[in-house]
Length: 276
Image (tube, rainbow, N blue to C red):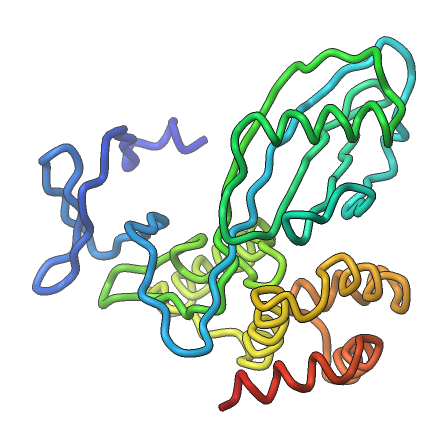
């Protein structure tokens, strides 16, 4: 539909910089383009962290596989399977069925450093063959990605530059969840444009940032294994309540119930240190 609109133009190129002062715009392949607003999703460099700011990497390798026989229940997804080695830190696998013969298998870690490339393939193969008990399968697609997990507060805007995606703080620090928050942020931007003519939206409640900071403190300092934390969350609470909490859509009563299900002292100590 956008391609059919005369007031849209698509250009591909390397964005060298964005700017907003007397004028707002971007420099792409040496060419300067100005606009009323620039929506920027590029994280040009890692930010300088302040006291009590944490930085981990969520990195993952995925194989989409196809089996000759019916293997998967397409109505059931596995979000965090911790039946893998935890030697590097918080590590788990996803299984996201496409249909009864195809699924995306994702090997995911929360650590400070990436693994050697061959280790991701080794762990995926081991999970598929030893945990899922599949030996007859074909790899049809692969993917690899890295998402920063941080409580650093990225600038949401700089004059008329509106940062979006990870660059705009739309990655949840404690889980790496990004896609849902991008959708909500984009929706809010459109609503503000329609209502006020300007794309500036309010910040989310600060308590969710504090929750993320506390959990990141624990993961960064290995106070508790991530496997124990996330397993406890899902074992002691309703799945929908946990997902609502992870989506920053819970109320205080739900949050108190979820927080009280976790080991008290490690989280209390981390919370105090985050406030000091």
